[in-house]
Length: 294
Image (cartoon, rainbow, N blue to C red; front, side, top):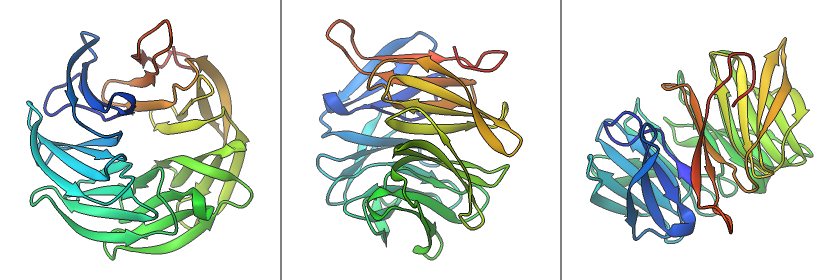
């Protein structure tokens, strides 16, 4: 599953890309109910909401398409063919563009108004987790096949730097700490959290973490970092001095590695896969007064 922050214009609702069901689910956190499900997708991987056009954007790996759903009713509004393996989606609010990772190595920029691909930014391998700098023009991209973190200038649409991951492999989730000017990257082989200086990629530290990580988030209010892992945990790290220290693991379920931090409601939501005895579910986790999640 992949989760985006909210459904269009409705507080407390958000959309879930249900890869295993080839569908999109709309969930209400307040009532804890599935409101509706939209079928007809092929392995939906990435999902995001563009406020400027009131559009939900869905990238599907199965057919390489990006589909646009408009308004509260999620009316089909267009399809962009990218070619193959459409994956993560981000919204560049300042430029009013949609950015999608796909294929054997590229980021596509899409105009949400004209529903057309504007440009393609080549990379050295398939892009996994990537994030946009809020107060600048860079995109930081995990490219595990190239053993690097790529730095892209989203004005010139070119890669401007390559940060080697040395002997660490399978760098999938990535987060940015804008306040401290750091890029946080989770590696699966070995299972470690790597910290890099945003300025030039200088390594600032490495610490062991849970395995099979898929999402990482910065809780700026508490100086915490949350990492969701398919090993069956959400692990919380706390900034202590210049480094990060694990302060606890919350058991979830094996394979439950997709999550979303929603600072507006101060909650972490985790997608839990179905088992033989339990259906798929969304867990809502609340930061405790003291330190960890509950």
